[in-house]
Amino acid sequence: MSFTFISIFILATIMLSISFVWQPLDFWLLLPLTLTLLATIALISSHIPMRRRPTLIHVTVASLTAILLYICFAIGKLLIITTGLPLLDALERLYSTVRPTENWHFALLFILIIPAEELFWRGYVINKFPYQWSVASKVVIAAALYAIAHLASGNVLLSTAAFVCGIGWGWLFIHTKSIWPPIISHLLFNILLLVLFPLI
Image (cartoon, rainbow, N blue to C red; front, top):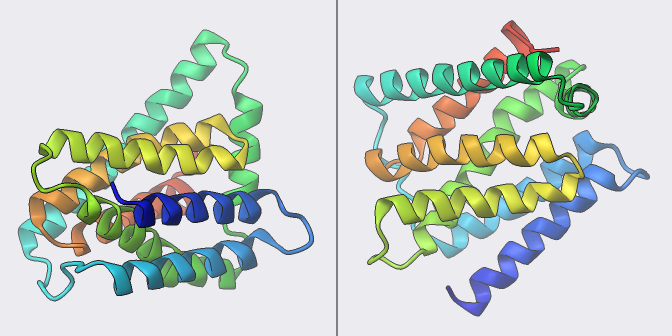
């Protein structure tokens, strides 16, 4: 990986940290600004496959991936409860931070934040890996970087969630050779998790 790639990853991590922990400006203002910059970098610096329209198979696989990820999270919450792990407070803090509460929050989340995240973390990051790397290596390393960047939030559950979701969306991106399936899956996953069937 090049010095430029490492520098951009460090920038992304710092900006995410500021978005989550800097109090003078609201999270719902800082995160969209951060991701707008990162998506711009992705579009300028990498050839992201965007012209290929999603097929019915793509939409189906993306939807199933979203449902599977939601089920994983629901099972995770059940394990936290049954094992007595002291993580419910962290889950509640996570929801209080990332769950939209205003109409403009929802608009930013679905129109800007989610597509921008996929453009950068899948479209840019994965495309910058050496061609010779295996699919598994690309998916796991990209998901690990996605998780490491989210450690800046101070919430271990968010970082864990980023890794798990990064596996699913990275796999979708590589196997469909299109950015649209991970965007669709990410959108549907957030609708399930934050709107239809929230875990808190």
